[in-house]
Image 1 (spheres, chains in turn yellow, cyan):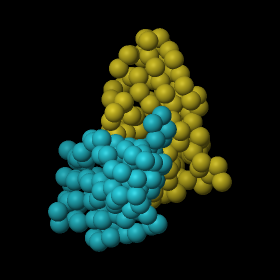
Image 2 (cartoon, each protein chain N blue to C red):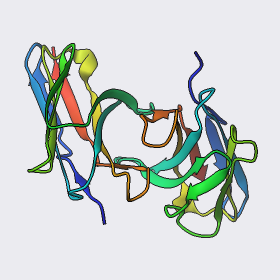
Image 3 (cartoon, rainbow over the protein chains, first blue to last red):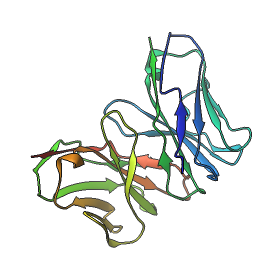
Image 4 (cartoon, each protein chain N blue to C red):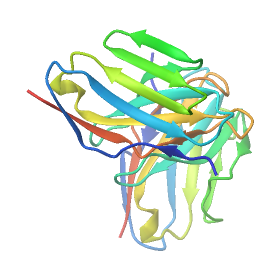
Length: 113
Length: 112
C-alpha cells in the first residue's frame, strides 16, 4: 500500500515568509509525528498527534511553529516568519497506534534564504 | 534529558565483512529500540526493532539489546556496498512521551 507522503518535496522561501508543509500518513494510522533533521544530525522530535489532537508538542522550538490535523488524517506543519535557522529537512512519520513502529515519509527540504 | 549516543564514523569495512554498529542510551526505562538506515538525501527506513534483552536476527541483520548496560547494537553480516549508508539508532520511552529519540547516526562505508 501507499506509504507516508509529504508535499512539497522541496521549498525555498525568503526570511520572514510563511510556509506550510503537508503530510499524508499511511491509511489507518492513528498516530502522526513531525521531526526535523539538520545536516549531519539525527531527526529531532517536534510534535505528535493521536487522532486529531496534539498529544505532545514539547519539541516545537517556539511559537512560530504550529501544526494541525483537523480530521485525524492529513497534517499541516505551519511556520510563521521563517528564519534561516529553520532550514532543515522536515520529516513526517505515522504509526498504527502510539508505541507502534513509526514509518517515515520522504521529507520536505526547506531552505530559508 | 534523554540521550542516545552513536559514534559518527565513518566506519569502513571491506565487502563481505561483518559491520558492527553500537548505540548507548541514557534513559533506563526505555522500552523499544529501533535501527533505521538512511541513504544520503533520503528519509530513514526501518531495518530492525528490538524490545527485549538478547539477540534478534533478520536475514543478514542482527540486533542485540542489553538493558542492564543500556546498550544496543546492530550487526550486518556479509556487508555489501549497497549497505553503505548512515545508520540511526532510535529509542522509544512510553512514559516520557511516545516520540523517538535518535542518535546522531553512524556512517557506514562498505568498500568493494
